[in-house]
Image 1 (cartoon, rainbow, N blue to C red):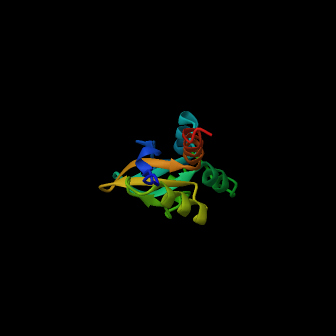
Image 2 (spheres, rainbow, N blue to C red; image 1 turned 90 degrees about the horizontal axis):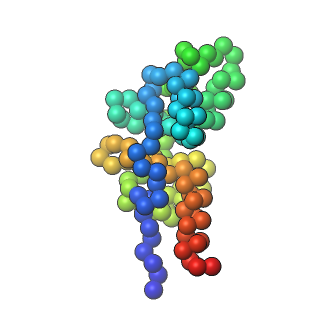
Length: 135
């Protein structure tokens, strides 16, 4: 008998750190370093408006005349955010992330960010699922 597909809630990182769209890039850097993460949901008044990654910040900062102390997160963020509800099947999220080459899925419930599922979470999930098989 096949097992039911697990949902993303079980494997997401709950209550992820975030950054405000009007904060300077240097603040996003600080949070990424402090929490040892690579993705930050970007919020405006508690509403998800984008995502900024370590890679985004480095790319923007290679441009001429970019000052991370004055340039705002909203100028470096991506507004194309893959967001899913917490009861989304794990295989659906993994498939979409692989197909679209997304580095993360933001988990949303009632308009609020409740979690994030990154490629690092996907690797940990794969490890756990393989180990649970008793192979």
